[in-house]
Length: 217
Image (cartoon, rainbow, N blue to C red):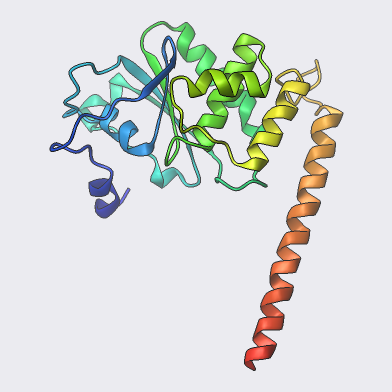
């Protein structure tokens, strides 16, 4: 992380402390600024939650928060790549994300914080997927539950559709053998890739038409 980014993500010393939202006992959701505050040795919050595990759902690993060298043994950091784009494959990372949350919580040595840039779409979708599986809930019920603790939660439309499919597939993209993709996921993935390519083609086509009008072929 460069100095400019690091400074912009440093916890404020002049405003109220940043506190992540507790979704279930031991499971928290926040934006990246709050995650940086939690990892800071200067975090001033009097009611600082006992968090050890940080799951970053970001587009680039260099955008994830870092730990002070003296505090590296106090935290476990994990990064999963995902853009806040409706055609990105959320389903592909859910199994790994949920397993990380589950295994971390079972250690009973500190809470788990899941964050993205704003704590609204990407990380919220991961939290929703975990809550759906853990409590055997459908998407709409899980969304109502999570919004009790973080009202701003709002997955993008593509993630919302994928979470509904996550429920229909009984919270896994794999068959019982653990390696074969379920048919529902394979069909969705093929359709999603086709739609993504079609959209990219239309964008390029429009750009070409615009260049012709401007005389910049």
